[in-house]
Amino acid sequence: MLLVADVGNTETTIGLCAGEIVTDHWRITTEVQRTPDEMLLVLRGLLRANHVEIDAVAAAAIGSVVPGVTPALVEAAARLTGSTPVVVDARSPLGITVAVDEPMTVGADRIINTLAASRMYAADCIVVDLGTATTYDCITADGVFLGGVIQPGVRTSAETLFRRASKLTAT
Image 1 (cartoon, rainbow, N blue to C red):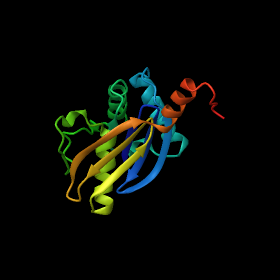
Image 2 (image 1 turned 90 degrees about the vertical axis):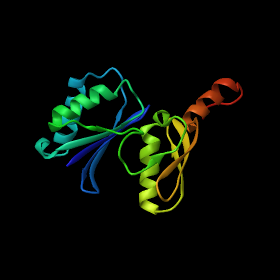
Image 3 (image 1 turned 90 degrees about the horizontal axis):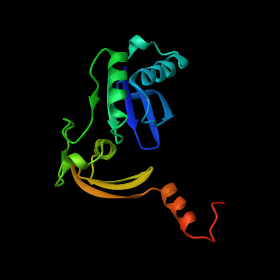
Image 4 (image 1 turned 30 degrees about the vertical axis):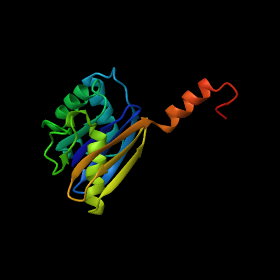
């Protein structure tokens, strides 16, 4: 099985894949201060709680937009699987071209989202992701990431609005 992790600013989604099927998935709070040992305990705990044999997890792939979390997760996943995890970035051999001036500034989340859309639909796509930030990205049917825009997410925008507009309340 493949362990996959999507490390976002607010939450980290962890999943298990058997081929192209996601067999299990969990959401945990993204915490920069977790050590590799703590992260390994979290991973093992999730697997055990769901009756997954730890030895069945042979490899890992990580997409992270939180650089402070990535090393601990990489180490924990390597210890869990016995192999070096794949960490997705613009250099990853995914069959897409990141056609922007500074490809390494494009987050793994945006690369993975557009890759999935281009594979699922085999068409030019605009992908919208509503997270801590809201992103709008474009990819062509033949896998060319053209770029996109980032704006504050819905919650981030609402919190700012409520703080700055004194007559508005959060309810």
